[in-house]
Structure formats: structure tokens, C-alpha cells
Image (cartoon, rainbow, N blue to C red; front, side):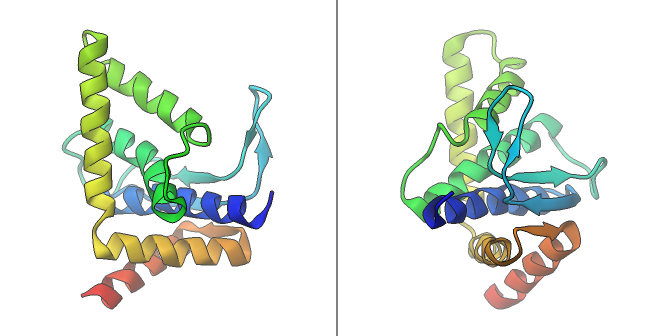
Length: 162
């Protein structure tokens, strides 16, 4: 993987991590180490969430979709464009979750668009932007970081932007 792809992957995974932590989801670890997956493809990185949550979600399904879309949104902020191919598994999973609430394809498309806009809005927060940068930078140095490190960088970003 070249440096540009590695950096894009770091921002992608950092986006998942920042959205998850902002929604009260504890993180196990975040990595940009490639790994083969059962479907025969390859996952370029991963943000592994712990079971449970710290805080109560108003809407569990919406939180999950926001976390799934946050990787693509954060990566696009870095690259300047959406990479739907790279976010294919995330988009498929988000679509499956949203389809449980949509009774027709038009409504599903509307929900997907609304959730993408909400993800963009939430990640446009200066604290979230800075946290993504800090986490991505650390991932490029270490390739894997703990959930504790993610929380540290998130709190550091909060202090820097307040």
C-alpha cells in the first residue's frame, strides 16, 4: 500500500473512532494493518468497538449508521472525494441497517442521504476534525493504537479547540 492509501486509511479509521467515542461507544483498538477477510477481499484497517456503551443512546441504529459512514466522510476530508469502493463494506452495512426502517427504495435513499448529511455535520466540528488528525497521525506512526489512546487524543483535541 502506498503512502497516500495508507494516509487515507488512517483518516478513514480515525473517522470511525471519533464518531464512536463522541457517541459514547468504547473502543478496543484502531488499526491500519491490512487483513484478509472471509469474503476473499482485504480489509485495509479496522476500528474495533468494545461491547456495551458508556451512556445511553437515543437511537442505537442511527448511532451505528453514523459510525459506519464516518470513515468515508473523514477520508473524503483528507482526499477531497468520497471513495465508495473503499467504504463498500461500511456502506453495505449501513444500507442493511437503514433498510429495516425503510419500506421502499425511495425512502431508503432519502434516509441514506439524511444520515450522510448528519455525519458530515457532526464531523465538521473543530474538535472532531482535530481529533481525527491526531488519531490519523498516530496511526501512521504506530499502525495500531488502543482505545485508551483514542480517548486521550479526543480529550487533547477538546482542550486544543476550546
